[in-house]
Amino acid sequence: MSSSHARAPTWRHSIPALALAGLLPAARAQDPVLLMPAQISACTTETDDAKRLACYDQLHRRVPTPAPLPADAALPPAVRGLAEARRSDAQAEADPARESGEATRRAVLGSTLDERWELEPRYRLANFLPRPYKPVYLLPITWSPKVNDKPSSPSPGHQVDEAQGLNHAEAKFQISFKSRLWGMADNGPLSVWGAYTQSSRWQVYNAAISRPFRETNYEPELIGALRTDIELLGWRARLASLSLNHQSNGRALPLSRSWNRVVAELNLERGETVVTLRPWWRLKEGLDSDDNPGIEDYVGRGELRVVHKLGRNVLSLQARHSLRGGERSRGSLLLEWAFPIGGGLHGYAQVFSGYGESLIDYNFRQTRVGLGVSVVEWR
Image 1 (tube, rainbow, N blue to C red):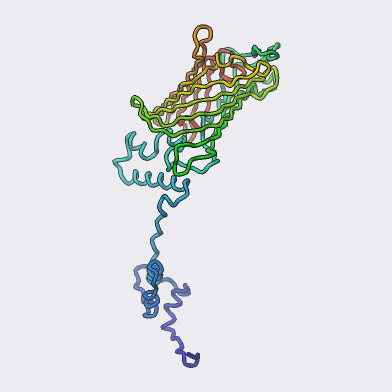
Image 2: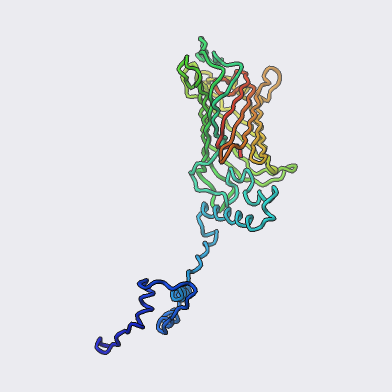
């Protein structure tokens, strides 16, 4: 039809079009909407259900309800885990009967090992992201009545002849993280992790020798972890692992210390308590390269760790032993207590007694106490 025969639109026909274009003030939500037959017809002829509904919503100035998230199976693993955790939290908030009790908290937050090792899909994060591993803390003050002023090792060239002039008081801190390097698809039980822990002892109060770092231990690990679900005498075995562990202090002779181990681990869980069994086997070195012969007779051949969460307090006891009798019966005890201060910060107290508080002290018996703060505790 030519333009000469086209019917010119009147101002009455232009009002709805101007309103839809946003050139006139929007009607209030309670005001009726005047619709023209041509507008309704345009929606009616739309064959796609979703588009037809959107057309009607637009005409009536309705804000459509946001579309739900896709099925969890269609989400990436990291997003799927967060979605499940948020859904559990929302269910707990909506149901007051679920807000108390250990079983309820476990249903919402998962178990201690679930959180640490992402055993359930809802906790799964992307590979290579750093996660907490061992406690991360700063102890501005630690003190021991007995210091290893002349550290030595039976290995040739590993003896210090002159006293170092060490203070009994020093600072100590530790950083530790892990990262999943590989995991089976479809939430399979096997995963591979890399981990790193570093702890330092700092003679910060010893101005006479220029406040040096007395000892820093570096501990990288490669861990193969297997998710399990086995009941043992009322305990639940949730995780087993096998790792290749290296520990050294990165120093030159006569203070060089290092060793390599294969470490097996089994974690048992019941309520708020986790028991960890860790036997290890030292990888032998030649006599000319062994910085610390017989270290396993001092530091031990295995470890038992018990961690208990009491509210926001975290208590842990670590016991190591040489698993030998007589003069070779040696080991250590480490007691740690993390108590809430505010936010994510905890106070942190540590008591150590025995051999191997650090690598340089592997064959030196001492008791050391420390007090400070932590941002990551045993979980």
